[in-house]
Image 1: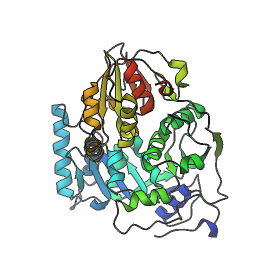
Image 2: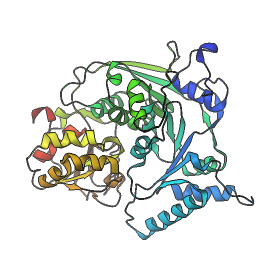
Image 3: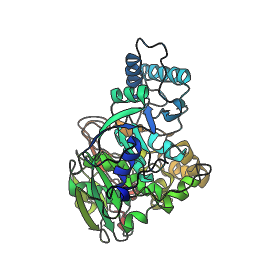
Length: 431
C-alpha cells in the first residue's frame, strides 16, 4: 500500500501518514506538499465550473482527457430533479462530460454525495479525497483524509490528479463516557463546535477519539466528521477500526482491514481537549451561527413553522428511525410542516421496507426523494420571512434555507421528532 512507517521516522498523526503516502515521502504538519489524490468528487452545483476550468487548462492540447476517470465521481444531488432551466443545462453539461471522459456519474438521483460515496464503496481508510463541497470532510468517518476544495482547484485535479496542500496540524478531541438517553452524536458534535467556536480548528485536522467515539456506528461517526468544517476544520477524521472494517466488508469485495491508519501513540498534536459527556444534554444551534449552541432547555418553547429532517448530516435510516420512534402513531402538530428527505435511494428503500415512510405520511409529513433539499435553500421547502425552522442539517446561516429574514435552529433527530409533536422546540427526554 505504499505505507511510510511513522516509527522509522517520527511518531505521526493519521493525517501525516496519509499525506506521506500521497507524496511518497515522510512529511510533517506545516509542510507544503504536492499530493496525489485518490478520489475526486463534484456534484451538479460545483461540477460545471470545474469542467469549464478543466477545458481551459487543457486548451491547446491534442488530447483533453482527465488524469484518471476511475478516480472521479459525479453525483447529482443539489438541484434534483432539476428545478430550473439553468439546472437542466448544468445536468446536460455534466452528463455529456461524464460520457466523453468515461466517468462514473450518479445522475439518476441516487442521493446526497456524502452518503452515496461511502455506501457505494468509494471511500477507504488512508485515502486522500477531495470534493468540491465543504462537507466532503464527512468521509473522515471511515479513516480517510477528505476535504472540500473550490471548483477551480478541482479543475487542476481533473487535469493532473495532484493538488498543493499545507499538511494540517491536528486538533485531537478525546471523548469519554456513555451518551445519555436521547442524546446522540449530533448533540455531541454541536457541543464540541459550541465549545471551540467556528474557527477553533481552522485549517486543522479535527481528530475524534476516545471510548465514546469508538462506541459509535458509522452513521453516527459520519454525523460528527461531516460537521468538522463548522469548527473550521480542514478534515474531520476518526481512526479506522473493526466497526469501519465491518462497514467496508459489506461494500467492497475482498476488502482487508489495515490497522496502519491511526495516529501513533506519541504523535504531536497542535491542540488537545478531553471531554466526559456522561451528563451531556440535547443541544441546539441557534440562529444564525453553528457555534451559537445552547442546551435544549434554554430554547424550549420556541415556536417553529417547519422541520427539515434529512441532509448528509442526519438523513440516514438510523436518524429517521429515531424520529419515527418518538412520533409513534401521533399526528404532527397543527401548522407545522415536516419535510423528510432520506440521504440516499438505499436509505429510502430501507425506510420503505420498514414501514416508516407510511408512518411519517400518516402523521402528516412530506417525504421527498433523496437529495439535499432545503439544506441549501434548494428546490423545495424554503422558509419565508419571519418563519422559524428546525433542521437536522449542518448550517443555520442567515438565508441558508430560504429568506434572509427567517431563523434556523439545528438539532438532533430526537429533538426534531419531539418538536414535531408539539410545534415548538422540545426536549426529547420529556416526550
